[in-house]
Image (cartoon, rainbow, N blue to C red; front, side, top):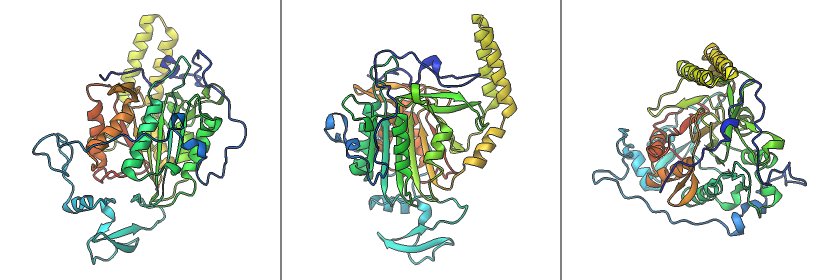
Length: 444
């Protein structure tokens, strides 16, 4: 039986209004709230430290048996989009590529004998088609065909032994790591897994210092057409925005294991580490299965389920702020009334200026695509599916791609939401570092 579990936040400690700062939940039990690890981390990271390759107990990666789901209806064609979405079917050329097990972005293909388009380098004949390799061009968007090296970083924090413990984050890491190896040719030796396992070494603990170093390892020496993968499953929150790039006035954050002493990681910081160093044409796929994660990487381009860019809805924000003021007034919380009204004023005043600031400063010609578990204003469920603890978003992402391996980005956003509909209130989001053609085939 599936059920909405506890949200992946710290309840009232998430909304940091007014003076901002770091929330300080009341932890019970000893837990694993340690400071930065002592000793070296092997900063060379030619490959990740051997200890980090082990799952819980050192038993290696689980190897679940996946089966291709049968078509949900007799009229459903093998390469048709998921039912009830009304999206166009892939072209005949895409179907042929899929049958051959080779599906790079369609825009990089030309028929045999066709001259290479402008700004595209030499063509390589492969599988009966000329594969066109985009060459970096200054200030030009470039999609990755994900044919280069593959690296993955997966972080799962259960906050074991604390009053804010979660249940499914370790399972999320293990399940997605196995899924990446089985379906997308990632290798165990090119993965770093950070989990707060009791038997884990200091280097395997998802402390702020370890997460930062592992993020730096992930993007180090990145090249065009590489495929990098980042997954975070744990608590998320919000903190007051101090640089004016958030239309709602709050930065999105994640909680390392030692956040009480080392602090949260805010979206601006994660953008600087994971996105800014990447070259044109390098793919980073990021998944945040945490509360308030809609813009956790500060990517400027957010897409709706119809494939169009979303704009900030200031009137909706104002309405929610007014409701908060009324609620505070009913409780006799005059400070809450002032805070809510002030927040509404800030949002209406900032308007589109924050979004424009984000587009100006954080648009990247690297190919960064992020899937979040919910909107910035929502929580993500720590849930149970098929009798196993899991994050709702991590489960939905893997389930959607298992059922329908060949989908466009728009289709995938809708099928992920379809998996959650009726069970959970959260609305996963799709954002990108540049304007995205959502009709392209989603690849990792």
